[in-house]
Length: 331
Ligand code: UDP
Ligand code: MG
Image (tube, rainbow, N blue to C red; front, side):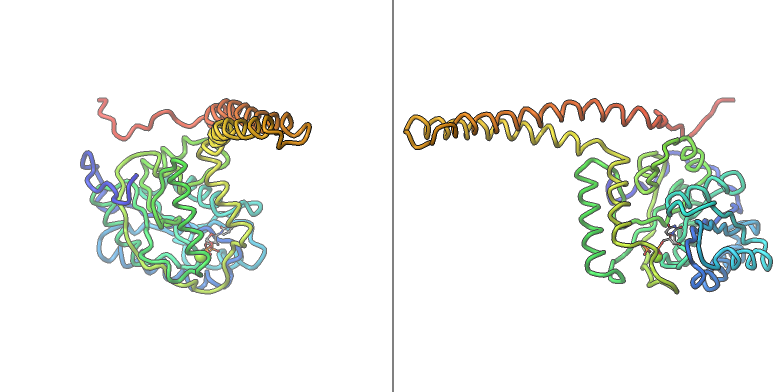
């Protein structure tokens, strides 16, 4: 997918006049942020209801991802005071991706479209309204794209850029500067439910499912309260997960490396043989050099061939749907 998202729907999709929108909020140790962010999110819903954009049944679903602080009791109190704050709690901390997926699968049948929003309101509440507008005019998936990364540290900004570039080089479809802030309509959620893999990386899956998509550009704010839940190690782990759950390309690189070494081996062999016959080599060096280079490249090529087969198994075991149906006219 290119940065320029497809904006014209293939067919004008029938949209309910007042869609039910679910804001899905993954929460891990968010006791500081939730009391501030939940009322703001409800305010966004009120605003959209007042503008007659969405149904008054629209709601917020908080997913407590096994928090160790007072998050769950805060969510329970919020639910008591306003039933539009709904919640589920995971039995233990499974990470943001799993928390979002649990939330999306919970709201799938009770909403027309769901938007994943971080609990710290780094995703601009105003952009939620723009997303719903794009949904109402036909987009099935709307990606929130950050206008700049100035609120990030130098390291996070540059490592994120390098990660996007690497993903693209490895053949992954990704939306540049899009994190997890996105709208998905019922159709997109139904397709997502077909993906049975346990290592689910939503940012990679969503662009690969097709459908009509669009983007909303927004300024990412600083965290409302509390601290980031991602340590450096977790960021690295998420990046590795993002690549390895999508592509077997790194294994193919082993094969390419083996071939490159075999070519270099030819040059090295010429040099070794010339040195040998010129008497510049000590006894045993020539045979050792020739075998080290030759065997090294053969081993890498063999590993690459095995990698190709493992790559096929990797794709097969995911049992991803082979096609996704966007529209049906069957009656
Ligand atoms: N989060 C989660 N489980 C985790 C880590 C994070 O549900 O194991 C949630 C967190 O509560 C927040 C969102 O994921 O709503 C994004 O996390 P955070 O703001 O810490 O990430 P950052 O914005 O610093 O990348
Ligand atoms: Mg954040």
